[in-house]
Image 1: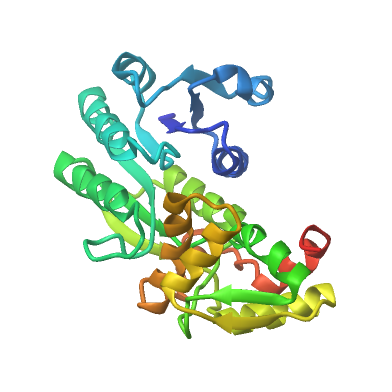
Image 2: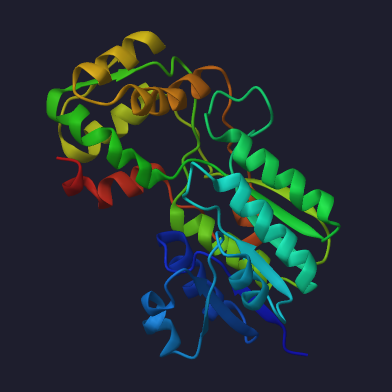
Length: 289
């Protein structure tokens, strides 16, 4: 029997990658949801059904989730109201009779995390577990692509100011994470499970700097500073106070052991080999200098 598989946030970077992987992985009916379905016209032309799904609009969730068997909730980017949005989506999934929920969470979101938005993910996980719907929670490590926010300026100056200490991060390729989400969505398993999605490696800031230097030919030295110094430095360069603290919390979290990895979850769930960080840095080296 043909099932209906729905991807929310399908017009975003993660969503589009997940759709591509899903098209290649299954003959089930694929539905792509977005606040603006027009952004999915290219997928509609390939036979993917598109629906308007807005986490701020309960009516759109009720209509959009109708007839859906398995649902991928890609975490919303609305940091000011994300938990409320996602709790609303879980409630709509219950009403629609969804049989399995896949959710993209973050590493170690439990209370005590230094990440300022960890509560959004933990609260959503708890809502999913309380729903009674079988689930797969994918706790996705930080993307390799996120390094584009730090490395260009660091390589330009030759110094990378960090409060991460000797903590390690197992950065994952966004494409690997999306392919894993698609594989789980297309799965026939009804068992509930939580997985940490990472690459096969984990690196300190110094080790990442060494890889970046090798990839770009630019020298890069890590300068270890405190959280307060990092925040003050960001503010001195015009970053608003709230955003400075937001940026700094990732280093704090790394230093305090709030990251996970490496794990074999990507290999286990997809059979694919996760992209190495060195490969990413070499392939995109021109974007960092």
